[in-house]
Image (cartoon, rainbow, N blue to C red):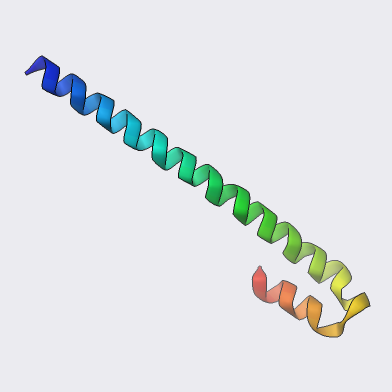
Length: 59
């Protein structure tokens, strides 16, 4: 019984580590997307008028 519980804890720890790594990837991607959106909102209107709209939609 003790070894089954230990294996279950190890499996759960591995699963949570995998999910945390996935969360890191999503967080990095969302920070990049929001940064690009902010740049488009602030400076996109100077280049093309529709770029600021694209930035607003991405946010």
